[in-house]
Length: 110
Image (tube, rainbow, N blue to C red; front, side, top):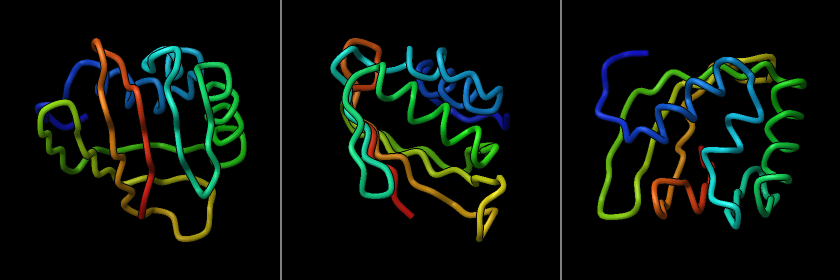
């Protein structure tokens, strides 16, 4: 991964994504975290783990961070995402809210 000043939890999230490790990925989130992606909402680590496991099995997603900005307890990670999906690669924006060193909220947008 390119040298970028990412919070540790975001760096771990990217590494877990690129290893397709859904358990480590889900553990980057707080127990009560919420993820919104493609119009669906996933609540808590168990649903988040199932969501990312299915996404990885279907699309073999690899993330390459290209930009990160942070304001207070929120951050936006822009990443080039590639995999076995139409339009690959494309840049997605991960809108993050942090709590106690974990991700509390993630909304994925184009």
